[in-house]
Image 1 (tube, rainbow, N blue to C red):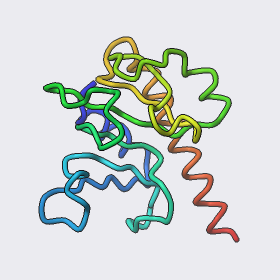
Image 2 (cartoon, rainbow, N blue to C red):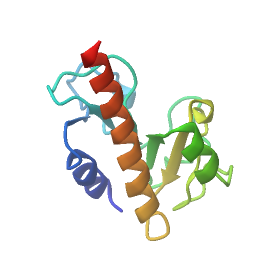
Image 3 (spheres, rainbow, N blue to C red):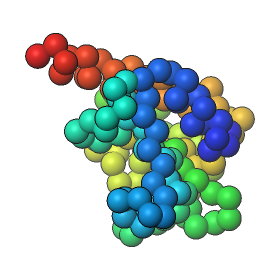
Amino acid sequence: MTIEEIIEYVTGLGGVLAMQPSEGSEAPEIAWGDTFFYYAPDGVVPAGQPFATIVTKDYPGDETSDLNRPGSFRVNIAVSKTTFTTAAAPTDASLEDTVVAHPLYAAANWLAVVNPGAATEASVRELLREAHDRARTRSERRAAE
């Protein structure tokens, strides 16, 4: 899977705002080149965390995935506790094309995949759909309050 394929898939789920900070944006420089997915059918960034992200480099304190290797990126996905406990097996965050617990946000039920490929493509799509569905449900619940 490429970054572009992931972005196309996630935005195709509907109601998704894909933020891609770049030079000159208000986002911190460290976020430039990364992608943040929000459920935001009105196009306004909602309060709270995105439901998935794509990061293209190591962040300070988050170097275990070794994303500074050429061509490396990591997709990060917020899932339910049940899905998290079922899907996260290995703990080596640098493994490629393997679903792992996020190196920093595992306690919040985030999964991660470095350079998703043939072994994880179907799982990544399913996990992204779940994360999108959960974000949509939260948004609809908030709107009804």
